[in-house]
Image 1 (cartoon, rainbow, N blue to C red):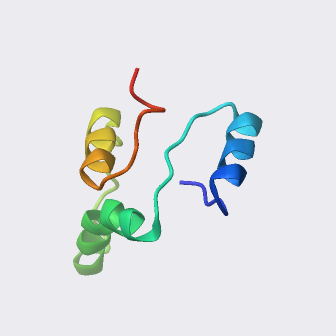
Image 2: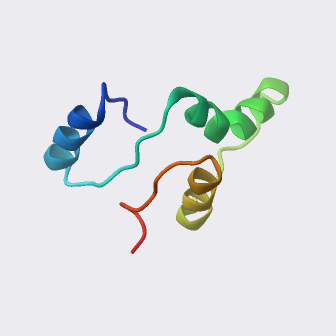
Length: 72
């Protein structure tokens, strides 16, 4: 994740990094990391997980994010 000030800042970042992203507000970001944070709270040695793009997109959609930049 990269943090941006607003949509204009995000657009400049996309041009500099040559990557498209989605805008996520703080509550949506908390929802996205909640499962991992909950696991690590109880098991510090819980192994890192593999990032699965299709699941990430579905999760952001479920959280109400516009993922059209990632939709084929």
